Image 1 (tube, one colour):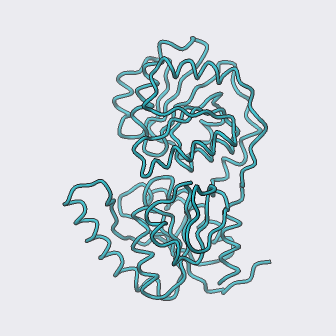
Image 2 (spheres, rainbow, N blue to C red):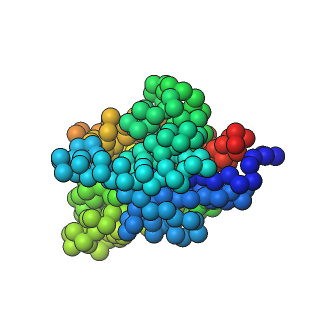
Image 3 (tube, rainbow, N blue to C red):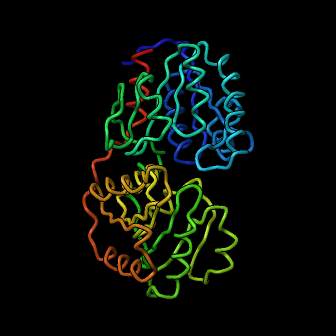
Length: 343
């Protein structure tokens, strides 16, 4: 049994992409099981706000935007929003603990906790930690790791696996695949233009008995709809991706930590194409882990064309799915219990 302060308040930042806010929301829901007060940081008008509302959480609005690889004006706005949000959060975190789920949206929460000398925790999903994680790992109470790291971090860390939504835990052995196998192209929460283009190039090359589906991302949806043939089904975004993944015989995907983990949890055959411009090439190293622990192969984008992908698809479709990989599927329980023991 876990004992902790009954009035514990937890401030969680999951600002960014689905790889940030979905694990954060799963952990937030786990804290709520223990009757803890959870405040979830969001940006007004962004996807994380809309998704978080469906979880019934208390929301707190801050400003945040990316820094790396942007122009001078954007960098100025980054520091301005960081200053503004840190000042706001200094008051909020005086009697709370912070939990940062990576990315630019976590910095103001970490700085506010440091100012108030309050405990904070970090969740790092990737094998190559992000810059915020590397910068503050030594000051964090614990860094929870989704995947084994390539190089150790300073301070205390522990591997917990990645918190995933319940749909990914209940579908892996219950879905009967249809007679006409589905090949699913998915580029994570924001879509991937290269994968969308490859799917369109393959639409007339694949045998007719295969179905094609693309989760395009909102940016490319209109373009894909105009270019696709009737045999391709396209959707911009889904809040229940486990249904589409579970139906697929084979998935072609980027190698974000969350989406890769979800696919392996569903025991899917996967062709991973890491995003080549990801910071520190972290998707490449994620894909290495997924290929070692599931029925998956990887090809780098620079080596790829439609013809090579077609050969890989045909090879993977003939392959037998290995026994389900030994993923940790209760990461949120491990994380929350560890935090509650310390508070």
